[in-house]
Amino acid sequence: MGKGSGYGKVIMLGEHFVVHGVPGVVSAIDASTDAEVKKSTKLNIRDERKTSKGYGEEKRLQQIESIERMLTAMQLEPNLPLDIWIGGSLPGFSGLGASAASSVAIARAISEELGLNLPNEKINAVAYEGEKAYAGNPSGIDNTAATYGGLMWFKKNTTNNQDFVEKLYLKRPVEIVIGSTGKTANTKLMVEGVAERKKKNPQKYEPLFKQAENLVVAGRKALEDGDLKKVGALMNENHHILQELGVSSKELDLLVDMARKQGAFGAKLTGGGGGGCMVALTPGKEVQGKVASAFKTAGYEFLATKISVQF
Ligand code: PMV
Image (cartoon, rainbow, N blue to C red; front, side, top):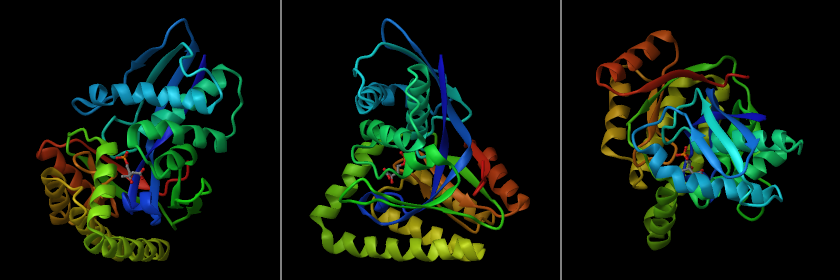
């Protein structure tokens, strides 16, 4: 039997814009998806992840397409019969890179089961192919974080596959709270919607892309300088332009508001939006605890974790 894992992630700055070549800041989180793969006589997927309502059904066909794409990228038969188990500590909530984490985990498990010995670079490239089933035109930020872990600066190369990736190191890991709306979102539709709106109305959207670029650059500097108040303010600005982009939702705005009222330095949706998750910057145990208990009291699931943990 082959085994593999992939990290979950949280995008701190730049989602959606990152698909179009704007840089993004992403951190892996200390929750991962695990996979086990065994050669079999037919394809059988046992998905035992904890998920938000409807996640399994919504993603089922995309999951099968993703596995076929990954097998093809490994120069294998797309219908290769395999027994696949998926589990681990990362919940299947939209926005946490659960699809990329599972693609990386499955790619690693296939590589081990078939003795392919694929290096990380190849696992990442294979998982990127798998991500296309879930996101249509993914930036690659999710599979890169899922493969390598840590905090990173990511810039997609929109003309070839040579993305620019740089690990970032902070003085200490910083507490965050990730809140889940409980709503499963379709990343592919969200990404397509942004591309369509941008094409139809460049006068409205192009300035937002410029603003996103400036704020991600400033956010990286503030993070590295340890100026967390500034990082929080930039996350708030980022949420605002994601609202303008049309990818937020009533529940996301509500959780973002709730976190800010409890003392979060900043809060924004994270990932594809349209449901899924938000992230609040909550340095120190006290603020983190306040935000987490507000979410708990209001009946929302959450993860209280840290960014920039080196695994
Ligand atoms: O919702 P998630 O976890 O699949 O994250 C999507 C992030 C996007 O920037 C919207 C898409 C991408 O490929 O970068």
